[in-house]
Length: 228
Figure 1 (cartoon, rainbow, N blue to C red):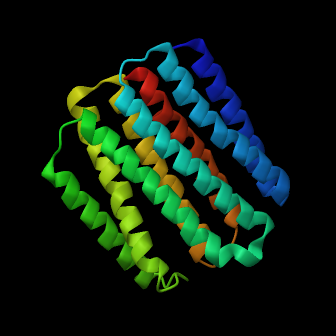
Figure 2: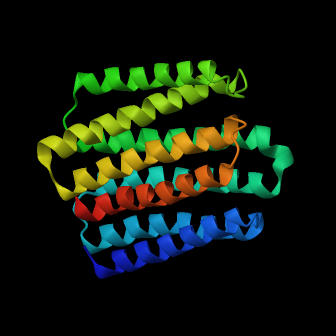
């Protein structure tokens, strides 16, 4: 993998760290700018990684689509921080963009790795668990948003299962990177759900964990292009 990928990854981490710092200081605008720059960074990692070793164009394109939808989701959820009156509209739209991004990831992984029926069962279980947690914890989720979140978490778990089987069976750097990235994504979005939909105190802790796992997740998924 080209050294430029590592440089871009380091710059992305730096912007992500600045975003966390600004968010903890309640400096929403500065945090949003750093978040956008970090989001652009993981797309750059994938592009540079592919140009250095252009071996699998379809995988690269699918991952890039996923990263770009994630970038759009970041923009929408970032705007929410400086325009909270649109929060109820931006959260579902941002979630939908990320959901589409996960679909592209899944297509990319299924194109490269063997399909196992048990991954579907795990995905369905993930959606049912999300539904149960939302109801039992009495999370403040609008009725129209509930099905979207259940489908979202179902796809998130399914993606993790697909990459998990690939990492265990093939043990290639690309599969391992994709699996770790998928696990970090699950942790990140779990923290995000707590921040958005529960009245929990000390949300800065969950925001910090969410951002600190989200960007490494996207960077690893982007690096899987170069490692493929």
